[in-house]
Length: 102
Image (tube, rainbow, N blue to C red; front, side, top):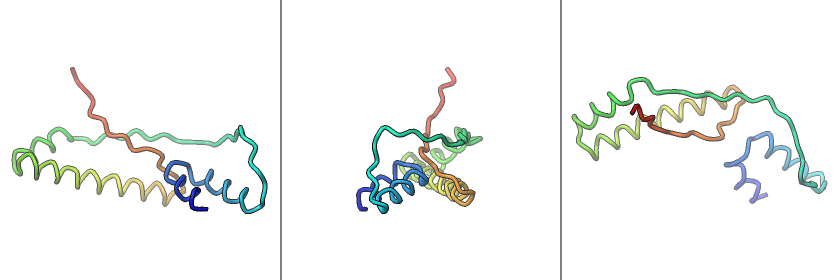
């Protein structure tokens, strides 16, 4: 059961639940197995990120500005993950990428 708990960070909850049920029933899983799920992908952009980054850097300096920015981003991400979970969803990846406008 401990190995399933470790995997739960990397797998959707429905897959973990399936594996737990299979293990409890004593059924041996015969890979490969395919299941189909309806999914949604959310792409979100933090409006004003560059301006916020520059303002925090100018006001607080490089170290404290970066820490404050990280704190705000972590709070925002935590809120989005909780809202997704409340709706019955799973967050499989939160990728932060600064797009180059070159």
